[in-house]
Image (cartoon, rainbow over all chains, first blue to last red; front, top):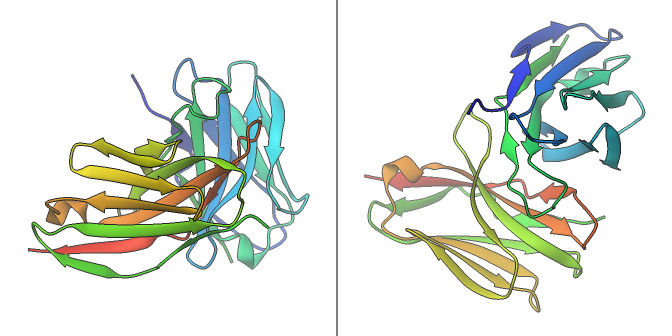
Length: 114
Length: 112
């Protein structure tokens, strides 16, 4: 079974631009979560989508948004990029809405903001 | 603010020894606890989950949970150089919450 895939793997943007990252969950998985990982703050939860609905949102500004499509694929968008948005963005999927279900992480998108 | 604290390390142990990784959490209502392993340049992978007080063993790994002390640990027996990685403790707080809060991780180095 194919794992979680994320595109693109690497991205370079400049301040003020916006960016869209894509995540395809494991086939049959309906929940997709997004995380930001930086050396200083570690792994921080951005939001989770289940059946096209945002179920949880972390403590990030409104510049960070996301959505989920009917095929469970998800996108996240960051508008008006800041230098501090440089990070590894990880997507994770799990089969159901059960919080005990294992989350499987994708390889991540490395975003660099110049 | 729900927090998960880990000693950042690095923790160095000789090959064959027991590595002990510790984690404390602030939210007393936390229900689910996870240990992830992250190799450098890779994404996290789940190695253990634990939901009730006591020990849970899986091969060379043992997770220990003490809710009264708000403490969870991971023991790695017979440590191997391939265990060298950053270990992330993660917590889900309360039923109905699906948000994983991660600690910043402990870097483990197993010396041959």
